Image (cartoon, rainbow, N blue to C red):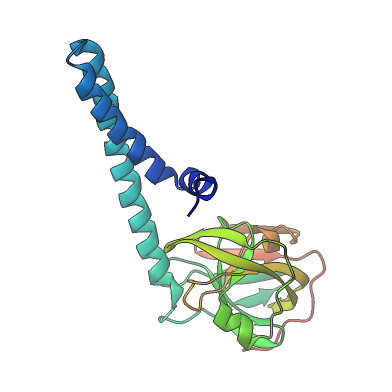
Length: 216
């Protein structure tokens, strides 16, 4: 890896950068103590605080990553969604997340509804099953997952259908390392007339309700 590649990589890894800067501060603080004990102690203390912050952030990411593994395979099953009036209602699953089962390009697949995701995402395995074609791009999209930064490809879902909702030409990314998980992101939710959570139920309201999709 050349220096031109190494610097952007380091800057894209904030935890690594923080840890390196904290270690450097501790070392510099130790050297400064010989000439200025007060200044050296201050710099060393800041370095130790940085190391402690890096540790806390690392633990937080590990916990989030373990949660990602837990919901990657909804072994407990996807609760049955239902259409009531103009709304599609999705009960919360036993894993504490909202799952829907949708037809993607005519193939039934489970999706995790993730309001923290900008784009809808599918795994390469499911992209192959649903004949999801990658869009030509000059450079791949870099995504952060529980397993680190991965290279993802942009694609278009011709049709995604569930309940009384149909989304056509929906942008999505094909992301390795998702272990068969599909994610519905904000680019899907923003197409709706509205969505909200009431108690243990996610309520989705489309602009133009369609005939309810058959049970799948």
